[in-house]
Length: 331
Image (cartoon, rainbow, N blue to C red; front, side, top):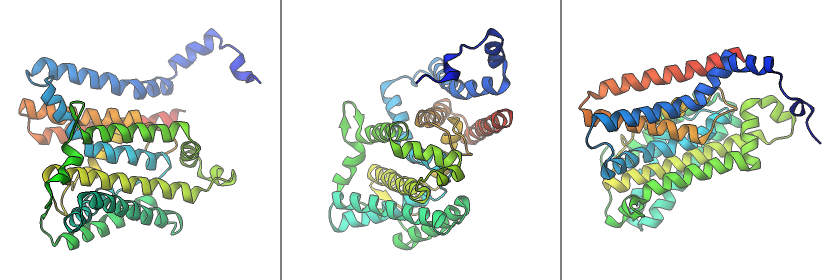
């Protein structure tokens, strides 16, 4: 059956009004403006430096984006579902510490598996606190961020945990088709999460839950299970990111990735994803990750004080969130 509204062509006046509608224009800007900004940024750095577009430097940009990108991609699903995970950075550290210690006692493979399972378990705790405990997501994950951070300090003994088996580094540094394995892991996770959101029943349920929780409940969706699974996914991916960073440096501590959650949230918001839930896309997050990675690399090549990088990133975040709020008010 053909939908009646879609079968009726829009009149010129209606089309003109739609084109001129400020909210629609800003929505288009949110969708495509970030891509234009990224391309312009790349061109500017290509022109202003001799090394930005070299193969080795582009590999460095990609490598530097892996950990933040992994946490941001999984965090996007949490935010679309109406949640907010502040604890991913702490899960990143504590899972890596436990994974490295297990690797030292058993083998790298066992350590990696245990580390990811720990991340999933800590994510499960987050999900249960938010659903069964009915605690506000922001408050719950703020509390677990502090608690998990304390666990990382206690388990590591406030010191550096070294990797005994050099083969542990293979998870990050093995070359596959000219790029490190860790970069391919980011690509695989991004594609997998994109497929999950756009082509599965679970993905449709995530959008439904974030867009209208009450309607999702009335329609019979298992909202508690869906939200909990998003936190489990976030925890497991954060753990994988922590293990990759530990594999690169062959060490990990409680302060490893101390600010990574803020970088990940920045990437999500810069990408134009709505902080209010119910809408968003993995590709937007990946563009946000790329923007932050290119800004960081470009500032380093140009010798600019990192303080200005924070100012620029913060300004972009404010513009992105402000645009989202303005669009919603005008809709």
